[in-house]
Image (tube, rainbow, N blue to C red; front, side, top):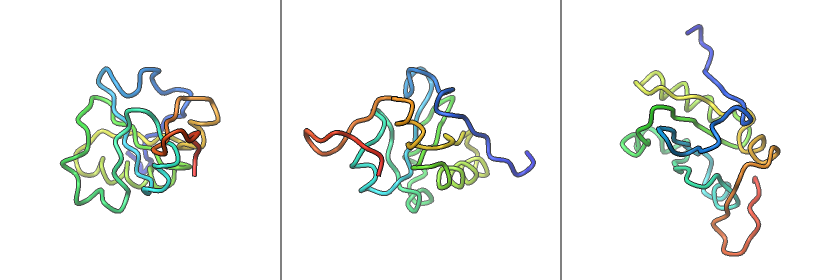
Length: 115
């Protein structure tokens, strides 16, 4: 690769993500995750990735997401340099929410949103 991080737009993600050999890794901070995240995503904040590599989900297609795509691009590059085959979700959870993909909140009864 020529330094480019592989990426995909939220519109082009599989409808059944996560599932069928796909996984979604959310690398935002705990407060961002709590406000709203994709159902079934795995949460490991960016700063904790190096110490929690054993918790990265095994999948044929690993998608990495943050709020807007910047942090997840860095994590995607790091993971790919260390043996994973990861893809950055461009526009992040902002793009995810903008196209109406499902979200859940960790706050009971609260409407999920992107923080």
